[in-house]
Image (cartoon, rainbow, N blue to C red; front, side):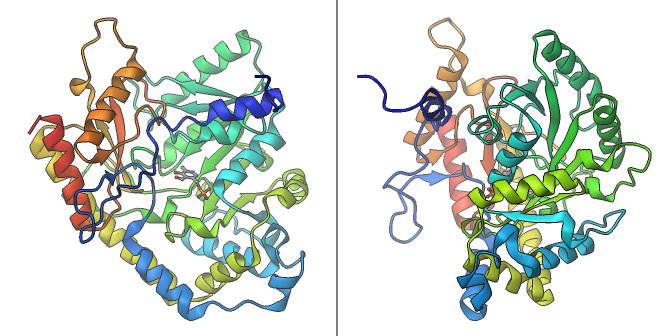
Length: 425
Ligand SMILES: Cc1ncc(COP(=O)(O)O)c(C=O)c1O
C-alpha cells in the first residue's frame, strides 16, 4: 500500500530502531514483581527521584506570567535564563562569565541538538562524532535537520588524548573527498557511554582543530555535575569547554555548550535544557525555531525554584555523586570478579561501557554482527536483564552500555543476572 507520508516522514520511522522494546509489561519490582525484567539500558538518575519529587511537591508555585503568557516562557523567560547563567558561572568556572543573553532554554538537550544541526548545517552537511557515542545523537542530528553523521573510528587511539585530532582529520578528509560539507564536531563531555571526561589539553587540541577547519564545536555537557570520586587513577576530572580561555584560538561564535536538568537533577520529565553560546545569530535563530521546542511554564517554574534554592542544589549534587560512587564501586567490583571488562577511567554519568564480545555467537557467516548482538540481548532478556544491543555506535561488535544509577538492590540483582546468564548459570 502506498505510504501516506512524505519521504522524510517515512525515513523518520526507520531512524527509530529500538530493537527490543524498552518497555515491557513485565517490569521488575523488588516487592510486587521480583521476577520481572530489570532494564539497565535507559540513562536515568533513579538515585535521587524521591528527593527531587519531594522538593517539587513542597515548592511548586507558578506565577501568572509563566502560566498565562507566551513571553514568560519564550526561550525559557528572563528569570530562568538568569538563574541558569548563575548556575553555570558557579559550577562550570567559565573563563568569561556567562550572561543572560548567552543562555537560551528549550525542551531538552535532544531538542537543542536538533536545533543546532538545523541552524549550523544544511541538508546533507556533516557532523563529526567519535565512536562509541550516545546513540540518539543520530536521531537528533538527522531526523529533522537531515545532517549526515560522520562517525569517526578511534581504532587503537585513546579518544581522550590530544592525538585524537588525527582521527578526526582523517575522517574529515574522507568526508570532503566524498563530497560532504562538514560543519561541526559534536563531543560529549563527560562522555556517554564511558563516563570519561576530557583533559583540558585535549579540549584545547579539539578547539584548535575546529578553528583550523572552520568547524563549530558543540559540547554536550549534560552530565557535567555528576562527576564522582573513584579509586581509578586513570580517571580525569571534568573541565567544561567554557573554562578554556579561547582568546586567539577560536572565534567564540563557533563554540556551543548544551546543558540540561535530565541527569544532574534527575528530572528528564521536566524537559528543560539550555544552550550556552556567544553567537548572536545562533541566539536569534534559536529564538525563532525555539517556538517549536518551547519549554512548558510549569517546568520553567520548577527548575527556577530548584536553582534559587542553593541548599537544594548542593544536596542534590552531593547525593547524586555519593550514590553514583557507591554504585560504580558495586558494579565494577562484581564485573571485575566475573572477568567482564569495561572501559576504565569513568567517573561521571550513569554508565559503564562493557565488553561482552566473547559471549557473542561465533562468526560463521550465519549472522551479521548486529544480529549476533541481538541474539545475545535476547538471551540476556530470557535471563531477566535488558541491555540495548548496538545502541551506541560501537566500533566492534559485542559492546553494551550498562546503567548503574539504580537503587542498590536492583542494580546488584541486575548485574548478578547478567553474570549468571552470560556464564549459563
Ligand atoms: C549525552 C546525552 N545528551 C542528551 C541526552 C538527552 O537529554 P534531554 O533529556 O535533555 O533531552 C541524553 C540522554 O540520555 C544524553 O545521554
